[in-house]
Amino acid sequence: MSSEEVYKVARNIFGRYGAFFKAVVNEIGIDKTLELHAEAHKELGISTADMIKETMRVTEYDLDTLGPLLRDGNVSHGLITEMVKQPTSILLENYRCPVYDGYRMVGIDNTTAEALCQKGAIAKIGTTVNLLNPKLVYELSHYRLKPEECCVEEIKPI
Image (cartoon, helix red, strand yellow):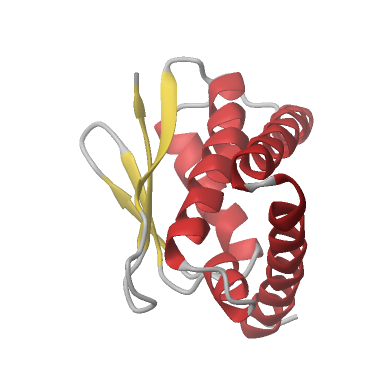
C-alpha cells in the first residue's frame, strides 16, 4: 500500500474509533471515557515495548534508537513525520495525521481531540519509552491548533 492509502485506512479507523468514543461519552461521561481510553493505551504501550524487545534485541534504547523507531512507527500509520535531533532530545513533528483527521471527520472538537491524544499518546508511547529506558520520558509537547500545523512529540531525559 502507498503512504496515502495507509493514511486513508488509518483515518477511517480513527474516525470509527472517534464515533465509538462519542457514543461512550454520551453514556458514561467524558472523564470516565478518557480514563478508560488511557488504560487501554497503557496496555498497548506494554505490549508494544514487549514486541520491540523481542524483535529488536538491542542492548540500549537511547534517543538515537528510539527516535527513528517512533518516527517509523508513525509513518507506518500514515503520518508524515519529520524527526529533529536536538542536543538533548528528539522531536517528532507530525504533519499529516490520520488520528487528527479521523477525529475531525466524525465531529470531535479540537479540545476533545487534544485530550484523546494527550491521554492516549502519553499512556501508550510514554509507557513504551519508560519500559525501554526508564531514564527517558515522552511527551506530546505541542498539539496542533489548526489542521495545517503540526503536533510535536518529544523524547528527552528525565
